Structure formats: structure tokens, C-alpha cells
Image (cartoon, rainbow, N blue to C red; front, side, top):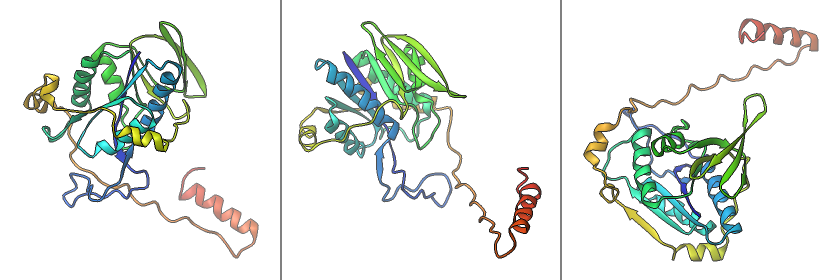
Length: 263
């Protein structure tokens, strides 16, 4: 079996997000990046399949600049077999659909049985790419997956939906699956894995290697970011003190009714 895991690097969850003075971009100076957390669950699920069948090949795939190599090395150290970076230096900006088209071109060269990815990226948080990749490949797709049972020719996939209900699907291969954090617990890379990762195949491809033209792709971008802005600061909390309990309770209720308007 061949499995591709789509990998994205995102700012560290503790990173301070800064916006450029013109408001049109993020200031990435000194920014620390990590593997998109949901993608780690996707990697782990692929590796658990590999643990059961050593003939399984796990390939990491990303469209990114050269800084992605550090993140890919971590995935290789966890146990993936090889990595493919599609270099992004030919395009100024891509939207979700253009990105998905690029990833699909690379996926078609590999012809995998399963494509794993995180359910969403924690930066843009839009959940576009998994379903777009599946649609462009005309493959079945289930997102927010929290349980997978592997059969001989298909998968039984479950996910939680609103209200605590569970949906269960039987999915034929090949397919695209988006991992939720409840799917598994990602393993840590051990020292032997870290040493082996440096010797595993790491392939860099340009758009032309995928039969794509940067100018045509750029003209196909339909969504652009006009500006960024930070969310408004939350107002300070109101504290009632130094009065009788009933007086403070009455003031709190009045505040919730007239100012916060939640009652």
C-alpha cells in the first residue's frame, strides 16, 4: 500500500502574530514554525498502517518554501519513508483551489491508495484543501475522522458531528481522509529515527516537473487576501467586591441584563 500525507507548516501555537505596516501581509521575521498539529495525527495514522504492514510506503507531500525541510525531517524521523517538497518560489500567492490543483498534480504522479491530511490548518482555519483535493481527484472523502477500521478492500470511517452524534461511512480505496485529534496520539521521534531521517529520500520538485505552468496558475487564482487585522482586545472583566453578598449578586445580575445583555 502507498500512502501520501499532505503536510503543512504553520506558525507555532505560541508565536506572536504580527502584521506588516501596510496591513496586507503577516510579518514572519523570526517566526517559529511547526507541523500543522492536525497533520501530525494524519502522519501517525499512516505510520500505524505501516506498523501493521511493513510493505506500506508513507510519503510526505508539501507545497512550501525550503523551510519546510525541518518539518519534513521530523515526519521522516517519526517513520515516514520519503518526502516531496513542491517549491513555491514561482508563485507570489495561491488560493486554496490553486494549491489543491498543485498537490493533485503531484499526487497523480504517485498514484497512492490513501491520502491522509489534517482536518484543517490552524492558521487559515478554512478546511478547504482536503475536500478540494478529493473533488479534483474524483475520490471519496471524509473529514474530521476520529476512527478508522481497515478492511481488505475498503475502510469503515467514523466521525463525530454536532450534537455528539456519530456518522459511519464505508469508503472504498483510493480515498482522502482528514484526521481529527481524537483519531490517535502521535508518536515522538526517537534518536535512531532522527539519525535515519537525514538519509531518507527528500525530493524537491518545481511546477514544471508536475507539468504545470506558473503563469497559468497565477492567472487562475480567484481569491486573494486584501488585508489582515488583529481581533479587538477583550474588555477587562468587572469585579464586584467589598459589599454584602446579596448587593453584589444584584449588581451582577443587573450588569448581565443591561450591559452584557446575556439575560
